Amino acid sequence: MLHNSTDFAKMSAMERETKNSIVFGGSTGAHTAKKPRNKKSRARKWLIALACVLVIGVAGYLTAVYSQIPFIRDLREMYIQTAMSTLHHHWLATSFIPGDVIDQVMDKYNKQLEENMTPSSDLPPDKSDEPSVPVIPDRPSISDKPGKPDEPPEPVDPTGIEAMLAMFPEIDPETIPDEITDFHDLQISDIVDMGILTTAGDQVWAIDMPNQLLILYYKNSDFTGKLAIVRDPTRVKLALNKRTNKGSTVTELCEQEGAVLGVNAGGFLDPEGKGRGNIVEGLLICEGELLHESDGGTYQACALDWEGNLRLGYDLDYSQLRYAVEFQPIIVLNGELHVNRSYMSKQPRTCFGQARDGSILLLIIEGRSVTTGLGASVETCAKIMLNYDCYNAINLDGGSSSSMTYMGKMITKSSSPMSGGRTLPNAWVVLPPQNGGNAQGGSETGSNPQDTGTESQ
Image (tube, rainbow, N blue to C red; front, side, top):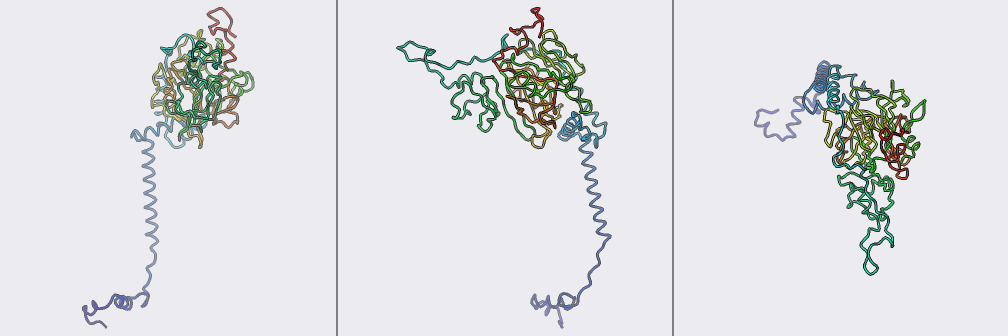
């Protein structure tokens, strides 16, 4: 037995541990009694944790629904607009967002549509009376070579690359691979892997010299899309569905007209999502004939006149129009961005525009998919088209209607469950050059039949 603290201090650590075990109880001594679990204490901890989660959840919900912090407010408006702009997915917003909040966002959106209204767009200031289609030099032959017999001929471009760049100045020549050696009749598609880029840095999906069109490809986390640049606007026409019981897909309308490319055009009645795509909604003019009146409201015309000029607005002279449908909003007006960030909805899109040189710009954005993303806002679409000198452009019927067909095959993924895309009342199609300019069906000179006294066809 220890007599004092000095003796205890002199003990080794092991001896002290052994002594403590004997005196106070331990593994080598008497077993201490285990304290009983405090069930009330554990339950109290769980209740506190649950209360914290609920408080955080409620605070997060209130912040998401009512906060005016710009970042949160923008996300909320984008979500509400995206949900409420669909036909079948309103519940994504109405299930848990108060009606007054939804109404406030949609009232703001509708106000923007009203402010977007434009009587009529202008023509590009540098557009001539004839469509600006680059002249493609013919293949050089010995008899065509300039110079006298005793003089060396002037240099020629045997591969035709100069002709291609004259047709498509958007292409960055530094990105053209060496494997392409002849450009005269170049017609290649699905060539993203080749790495050909435009001067704006976008990927080239197709180069089609015979049909004078270029197709670009877009892919990011939000959307996948394609932009077709059509050099000759007089080869663009409105194709009408000829069935009575249902509409036609874009691919079917291209086949009907012998077209090389097409996109969906005007809207149609679709009660409860069960429409068959054969009942036109809104303005419809084809070959100068008014087939359906405008529905008014905030819808505006997307029209081509008899010279291939794009005309946009709600107060156009119908007598000057060859083709017309209508939708909303105008996204580029007279060379300037005509929408702002108030248009937050991300959707599949179809946009129709015209560049300063007269080229037609047809943009399709895919969406509503895990693989393709939600889609794009109309502001994003406008900025894509402005990269290619767009002067006027409008957003057309989108969603599951958005579709592009090239050479008889749908080259964009529709969000429609229908394998070939939705059936529609009409489509914008591009005819091949051998069918002649002026998109067939009109006068041979492309003039307005009402101006010449002839009947429209």
